[in-house]
Image 1 (cartoon, rainbow, N blue to C red):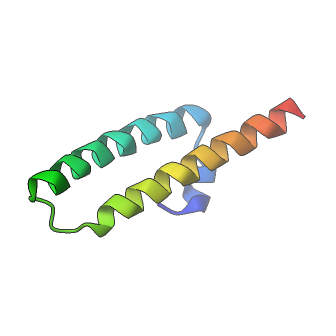
Image 2 (image 1 turned 120 degrees about the vertical axis):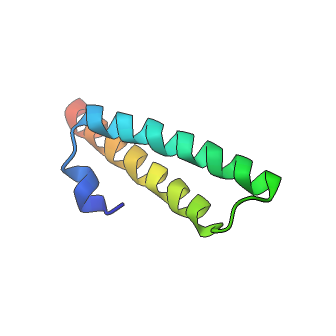
Length: 66
């Protein structure tokens, strides 16, 4: 997901998206272990999306604390 699209979301929307992506990552890891996953690049994509969301949330937290 693009960073600009994530920055346009509210904190609640970001937290909801974070939960969705974490669930998807769990499912992808499960598929990978059982040998059913065809596109392993999706795991890395989800990890990076999680990192992007957490970064944006932390930036906002720092901005409000300052």
